[in-house]
Amino acid sequence: MSRVCSICGKGKMSGHNVSHAKNRSNRTWLPNIQKVKIEVDGQSASQYVCTKCMKTAKN
Image (tube, rainbow, N blue to C red; front, side, top):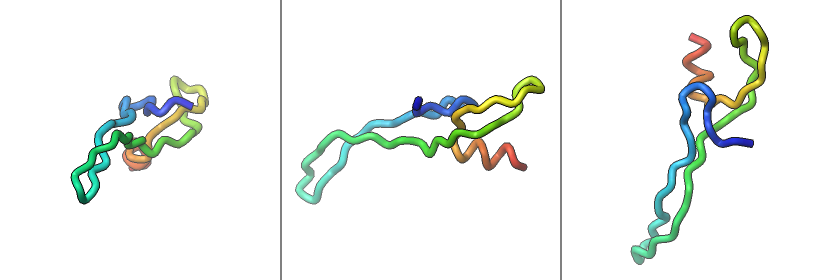
């Protein structure tokens, strides 16, 4: 499964976990991507969409 929103293009971000002793280890943040059936050009298609785009599409 791709971790990229098909509407806004939001993908994973990278950074560091920082401990109390300031030791840094690599980590990633993944967007909340869900598989949703949406209508594209009059046809129903299932795509991976982030929950923020799902929330704005309902309004």
